[in-house]
Length: 215
Image (cartoon, rainbow, N blue to C red):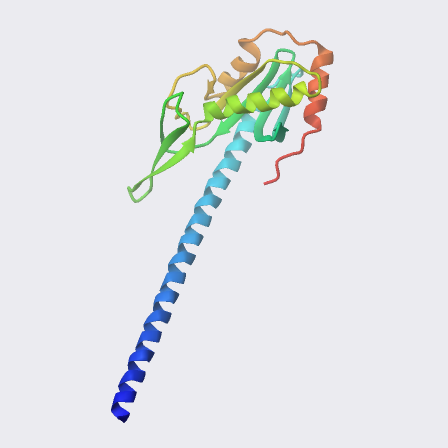
């Protein structure tokens, strides 16, 4: 009888140990995935912040005395929220410049809601990731910013651009920028001065009231 009891007890202990081992291994896997995802997000965030800093410096190089540059603004309109990387206001109008610092190769069409990013690691492994179509993203930003200004009785035509710091945009479009020269052309050369100083000042006052984006 005693050997039978010992055998049953041993089996139960083995079962408990296996269950505990499985739970521990599962927790280790979950923790490792969490750390990996966190590191990946952190690296992505750092790349985005570096890109925005590079873009602000690039835009600043072509600014003229008449220009005002606003960076990292948060705008809300009719329950919709957006974050604006850069907004330039001058006598030619209002210009949104969204910044993208995607490394690797991008694939997509101008009408797609999402694009695919291909990145090859140092080990030769290729990873894919889905990213929002930045051109459609800018159109949404235009809608929200224009609505916000209309609430202040300011009607103004807003032009939107996407600045690809890695010069890897998969489409050709007039709203795509890839260099300081492109930015200068967009906000100075290819537009006419149509805004009076009073309206320009009113727009700047509205943008000054917007909360900054907190990283």
